[in-house]
Image (tube, rainbow, N blue to C red):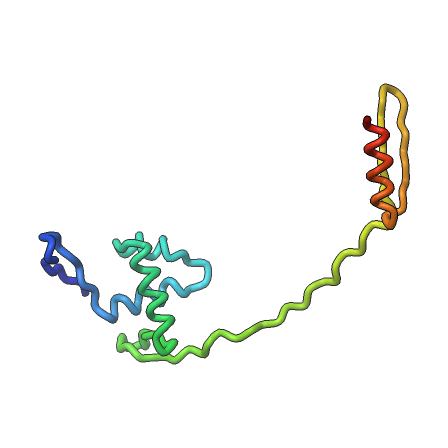
Length: 129
């Protein structure tokens, strides 16, 4: 339920009931649903709806959810928890540096140990002078 109230500036401001706010916030929390899409579907500003969602999250971390008979009930949600992720080990550095130079029909391939990368860079600078 929303109503219009005259704002001090002469513009009309809509007021939304707590049930309406809770229902659109709950719609935003569904997987794969964007806040902008819910706001557009309900004739709301996306920034305002995002603020409502943040404010609701900051409250006791509870949300009003509808029951099958149409009544609203408060369901307390647990705070987010840390979920450790197993990451693959970092890729090993390549064993060798491989440089291929082509000039006309000539191909020169040089393989250099990666442990001596500074020397390879020095050689490349001299070669390209």
